[in-house]
Length: 212
Length: 257
Image (cartoon, rainbow over the protein chains, first blue to last red):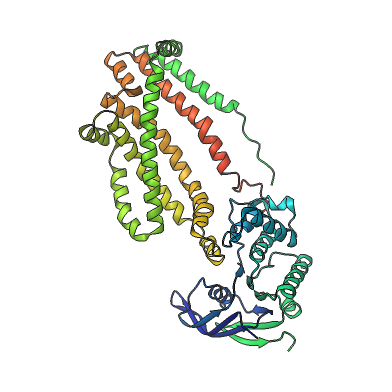
């Protein structure tokens, strides 16, 4: 089985303070891996390294994917663009015409539960949960084969969380999408993910199937 | 959150009425030579307009102020963007901006008269007064862009052109617009001052002539022309632009987190 993301012996320090120490992680293709660990253990740093936004001090990050989607802990939406404009902004990295960008953005916003009425709203007019949905729609709209999510559903209630997990699983089943999802919810990790990786002190201390 | 009602426009009229009352009171206390009355000034202004003295002067001052402002704003914007993106450029350009800001506009007028003379002295003075203020705002605009947005654009591999047009520019405009509005108003005042000293036509030249004749009424009439232009530009151009640019900002009516 191929590995869309592999981290071998990764060290990373921030302002001289070690954050990751010899971290190893492999994401098998087409799987959903839940990443857990206490606050400040380096989960967001791992996501940034996996996305190529940071360079490791030592070790190797190997990404074998055509398109990367990412959902940050903070939705990182452009405040001067509507929900539709924000999703469309990420699509500017692809070779798409304006009509196709718009159609794809509308469809993906609809898929995450934001109808035409919400698509025209600015981030300030959306709740925290709706902003996170826009960020998820933006990540999925690029049709990624590797999706990195840093607590994507933290601001959502149980019911919409379940619905969005179902959406992600459907996409995974249909496209073979590989996902790494940071979560603090152990039950969610057990029920929704195929693999579970637990971090502590800058390393993966446990990994395997959630039920194992 | 409940919307705070917008104060009535009557308050603006009340402020203007108070100013007019103070003006008229000053006229009655100190006499027409020091401060001509409202009616007298209005009649003189009407005569000046009818004689065809105001429109050409207005057009000339608008040309001088506009050209200087465009040149200064463009230079400030380009240099400020460069300085915001490259620390080396900021190190090199920041002291230059501070030096230029420290030189009084009147000193620039004197120097520009020696260097260029005529209307180009006016254009140069306006440009050199505008540039450093726009530069400082542009630097702040580039620096204040949220790092999270930059990372997001990088992660999605958004091309540089799209990043500049859809991320950097809209963000910068929010910072640069107040500086552009302030310098636009300032450009008129600097232009009039430079014209007065340069004798290069325009409203400043009209003021210089009125001063030479100790014609206080004409001076006040010219002042009214300048103020009327500034108010018109603010109401017809700047305020609508500002409303258009700020419609996405949090006005307290958002649904919050």
